[in-house]
Image (spheres, rainbow, N blue to C red):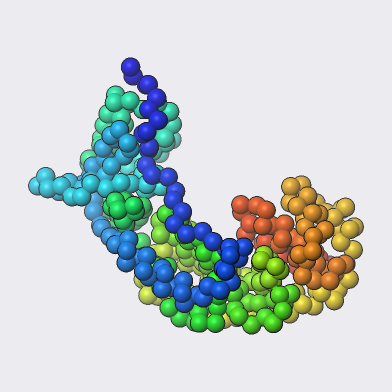
Length: 353
């Protein structure tokens, strides 16, 4: 019967996580940035990535029992390797082939289908084929080996500048350890901490790095303070982004700008943080009167009662510690850490008046 639900069909491979560990992972503090670089370079070699520029019209999508498969077919009918394809890559293709001014794309139409049978799959295949066959726009199709299958993970404009993760750690990382490393099929996220603090309550320089193998994020480098409490890291952000670049243009120029900023340390906010440890502050009154988002305020109040506050209780720095500890409870941790930095610096400015 048409529209009988089939549980095995998958409309593109979902987001995949290849590496996920942080400072709470056993022995994470022993990982050197140079070791991470070697690991990334080894994984890059094993996944055998291929970046291929081709017209959209040359790509053929088939909808079979298990999911969507992709294959390039030349003008002479010569067929390339049949590949898996991610949901993210399908979404990117859908955006490129959607008619100008259209309210939806073939991706949105296909994703909305909840029951897949032979008839439905054929309708979707015809829809995509119709919109792709006369589209001669050249795109960069990026693929790699995942579970021993060649998989298209990303589709970009042909001027997309590829920045490989291991290239981010070729310089200036010998004195850093890794406290966070997360790699997915769509982005990568790292935190490197300088090895200088003598006590776990002392702040260290830390860099937060984001990159994307699939065009979901800009390459960015931000600087913060990192305080080690037990196995949990808490940090306060610098007030300015150190480096950010779209993946467009010349890769070497992008990397040159990135590496030049990696060593541009701003220790002023570290000094500010240490100074806050000497500033008395009525934390209880702040908790009773603040206008923070309710869920964050609740986590903050609980954080202030723990033994994981690095700074003396009753100081402005202790509030910052509590905010960055509370931020760990949220998936968008970085947003709340930035909120904490903004809130604290606003309090400091008021105290100066």
